[in-house]
Length: 295
Image 1 (cartoon, rainbow, N blue to C red):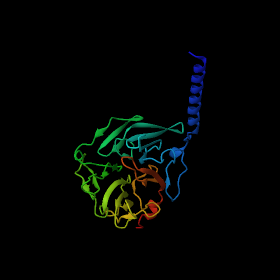
Image 2: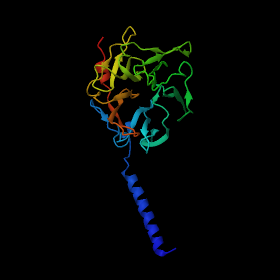
Image 3: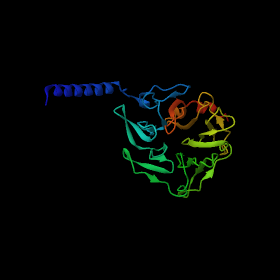
């Protein structure tokens, strides 16, 4: 081989290695709790900007109860497909990987044993997860977009139906070892349209969801209702203009330690087949007690 060709190849390889090394040096080292992020105050902030929340599509983030794993959905490299991503903490440092194409909106049961994915789920096996499974009756024919569970196993879920935007949020309890037929929650909660993404507190003391209602700030807003002493649900309370905007604010979640409230916000709509720019936000969760009616 010509000596000049060899030298050029060696130079090219040297530059490639140098560029790869430089790119790795520019990656942030994620150490500590909450993927190494400084906790927010009472004003919502994008979660892990440049790492989790970017100029692309990031959606539906959840931690495991031990706070050592974080799962979310993000747009693929083509910005039309979606993928299921996890960040795991090892020796106090976080490392991310793509688990699979999108398989549903993840929520995790309070005991950490089940990850719900709409009407599908996976079970915890040591430090990994089982193959995906389908819920049995009475859920097999329900198009569930998001399902969350209380500590006693009661399910709260929405239904995706393009022909019916006000399809109610429903719940299903375990009765004599089996899940009962789903029942709609009261009109206190099921008022408006696009009634989606319920989050139930582990003790069922409150429910948070998003909806388009007449008292909202524009697009979908986030609401909370507290369970009363008689077991009924109290009035729906809009979470206010610090959390809700004229944009789409939705898909909420409270960290297992109860300290922070996560939700999604539409930043820019997509063009054509491209996914929109949706970011994951977080904020101090103390508003949950601030808004709780005094008995």
